[in-house]
Amino acid sequence: MGRKRVAVIGAGVCGLSSIKCCLDEGLEPTCFERSGDIGGLWRFEENPEEGRASIYRSVIINTSKEMMCFSDFPIPDDFPNYMHHSKIMKYFRMYANHFDLLKYIRFKTIVVSVTKRPDFSTTGQWDIVTETAGKQESAVFDGVMVCTGHHTNAHLPLDSFPGIEKFKGRYFHSRDYKKPQEFSGKRVIVIGIGNSGTDLAVELSHTADQVFLSTRRGAWILGRIGEEGYPMDTIYITRYLEFLKRIVPLCLLNYFAEKKLNAKFNHAIYGLQPNSLHGVILQHPTFNDDLPNRIISGKVLVKPNIREFTETSAIFEDGTREEDIDVVVFATGYSFSFPFLGDCAKVIKNQVSLYKFVFPPQLEKPTLAFIGLIQPLGAIMPIAELQGRWATRVFKGLNGLPSASNMMADIAQKREEMAKRYVKSQRYTIQMDYIPYMDEVACLAGVKPKLLSLFLMDPKLAVEVFFGPCTSYQYRLRRPGKWDGARKAILTQRERIIKPLKTRVLDDYTGALVPYYLQIFLIVALLTVTFLLLTFLCNQLCISFS
Ligand code: FAD
Ligand code: NAP
Image (cartoon, rainbow, N blue to C red; front, side, top):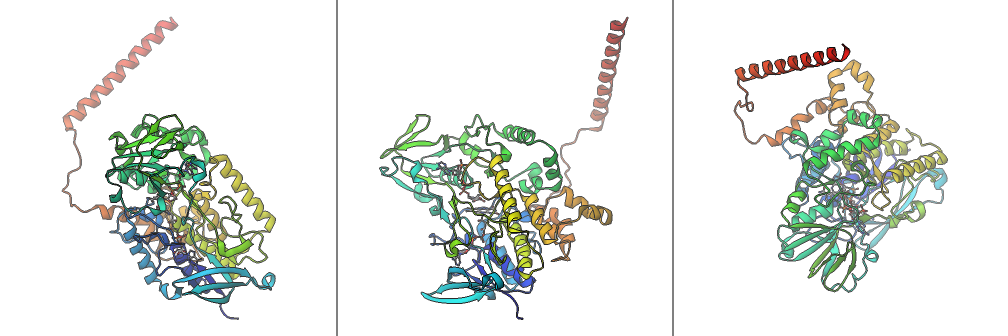
């Protein structure tokens, strides 16, 4: 029998890693990409294209390089920790070239339909109709990997904004925003306080006359930069903290996280604090180091939700009104759909039933996988790669899936957990924690690192795996898919974080020093005070007992 043929739909980051996973498992991939190039969302164009996600010119990613890279292809050590989209594209091109992936991609080819073949229950095969330059073609595939992304269709909730039809200014979704120059001198309202809303509000505030940032719920604002200047995700996405999260009650974690964030700037004073249902750990993180600065400078004014628009103004839910509004940007997120799939995966209110966010549970054969359809508290790329490694092994029959009823039960449990933790919003239908989800999929693929034996066999590595950033190389330490460079990549990850910052060679200055005699004096003073305090306490005790 020949090699199994797999159709990969989309050549964004998830499509690229899926092609590679197919090749690693000896499958024969054909990738269909509707546009003329790889990269998906991360390839910037001046004008938004139909059917492909669109980003603004200034986008800088908010997941750091060590946390977002593919597990057997570290990002070059001189690349910045948080990359501009142009640098990200450079990395994806390096990846595609290194693993020779381009020859498997058919560009300018749209997948029009994916349907089960009549003998699907025995073969698991699919008929795929594609269209290239207006000409349709059909082909048979043994497996399908859907990699079409979930940040393409704008969610534009105009129904929630009475009067918008009367508004005489300009309004549009953040997907259509490219650069700030054309908004110079304007009065702009940005609706939504996700990463798009805050990025746009900050950028526009440099040229606009005034920016209003409207939010119905508020948000906790995190920074990209953590303690000692290390990327935030490399500090907080560790196995050690994940372990603590499991034993410390959620309310305590939220309490300490809020205390820490408020120490930087008080979210209540800045008008950003969400209500109690929206604790730090109970929301998708909004990263913006510049927002508090723009707020305290008065260039961004935080406002509540909008009750109504008039021809020229916006009336907010607290009754306040802002006149002479020129522009409204709806940074209200995205919805997803799979028009080519028919009934195989129904999306209702941004929800689709998938086992581990990958496999539809009701199919007679597990030959359809969704890759990257997840909103992690971390980077999507390593997740998509691991999903691809697992899915291709399932396609090959090397890993099995539970019964349909068990998969449905797992899906229901995940939904229940999500409903308990997050507010009801279409933003929170595919939300997942990074390490628990990676470990779950890694278990299924048989590649989860074995910490206990690692501590016995290789304690140095084990310490970095447990206490250090949980980078994707950890999932390449074992077969199947072991990468010989994984150990070294883990032990050198901190060097790669620091490398791009070393652009000025420093002398041996070790920081402000306290002279030796002053240190002795302070120690003696401290001991004397302690001695006096103890003597005083003893005297008090003797008096009260006598
Ligand atoms: P996409 O990149 O959207 O690629 C999908 C591809 O499929 C496209 O090339 C499209 O042309 C093609 N396609 C679609 N339909 C068809 C069809 N019918 N036939 C053929 N081809 C088709 N994630 C992070 O991990 N970290 C971040 O910091 C981060 N920042 C983000 C910033 C912004 C502004 C946005 C909007 C998203 C961000 N994301 C981030 C999430 C982002 O979606 C992922 O990083 C990643 O791009 C998803 O890749 P993908 O391959 O799944 O989808
Ligand atoms: P998002 O995270 O879904 O945020 C949408 C915002 O709009 C939320 O504040 C939401 O409020 C609000 N909203 C939605 N419907 C609304 C309504 N009817 N009325 C009022 N408010 C409404 O969307 P996004 O900011 O575009 O981000 C999409 C993805 O891209 C995320 O994964 C994000 O991390 C990523 N991203 C990253 C960067 C970066 O790396 N620099 C930049 C932009 C985006 P509720 O919370 O109340 O629902």
